Image (cartoon, rainbow, N blue to C red; front, side, top):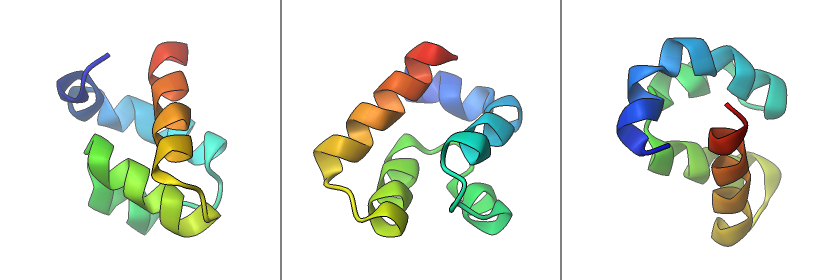
Length: 65
């Protein structure tokens, strides 16, 4: 899945993202608006993960969708 698909399906994926990353608030997810880079950054910030770890989680999330 590429970032265009994430952005295009963000309304659907937003709820799933919040289930996976419960520390992301509605405000965080609204601000992200499906932007993959923003999502990775917020995961890094909220969970203290490295960029590589956060990217891996987003990749798995994309594939699981």
